[in-house]
Length: 352
Image 1 (cartoon, rainbow, N blue to C red):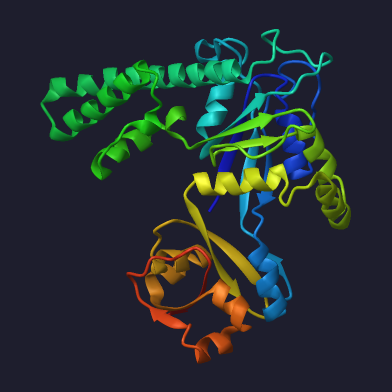
Image 2: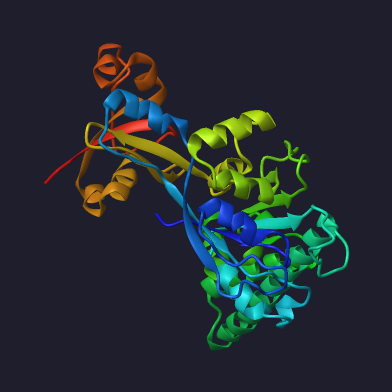
């Protein structure tokens, strides 16, 4: 499944530098607004130490991690929702992603201009939040107008239900609440999903700080990193990177934390297949049932699903392989109603 996280921020917040570090793709990162106009897209592997541990036992010919796409979207400015700068074009790019990572400038550098003249990540966050909310209000207002017009041809229960949802979303946005905070029933959720609202998307916050100021935050969806250091780390070999990180006293790079947080924000889990041919990680939403997980591997497998033979990656690693799991009673058979768990190793049995 294709998953996209958009890097969104004001000009010169360090988005393109962060993108370079994330993807190791050389894109412009110059010191002027709108350096990035068309979005750059890079596919990034999700770090998972279990892959190497599974491979060590299975002795696979190759390892295939699960991935996320990061999209470097050009800098927004105040008034973007009204078309200021290149606002409308930029906002359309954001609608195409599954989650948003707000990149906020917290570093001080007199040689890098700030569009508002001063470094204040809280103010920048407010500017971005307002622009996203105003864009959503425009979307909802237009949708309300079109939907209410349908009532003239006869009162429809479905049209009325849709109007009720739109009104709830409009009230929330007018009260400075993002659309994601509006509690809806499962039946109502489809109307919100059809709108592709910016403030309905999962949100991460990335503070781009000065060297020596990185560290943990109080919120799992907040990441503090130094894009400059992350770019330096990305250019090193694995051994050099490990040595540099040890010198910095960190176990996981800021990029790894960002990728993992993005994966979590999208409510995703990982299951594995492993054997001599390959050890591979697969991405599914939490709560995915076994037949649908089988369908991720091959579209025909969902309809032809018979059963799943499942064991935990932790048991597989601790005991030393599938046979040991079987002998220890850790290999079980699951049916169509089984919800895949993070870390499951699955062998799907399907009909022909």
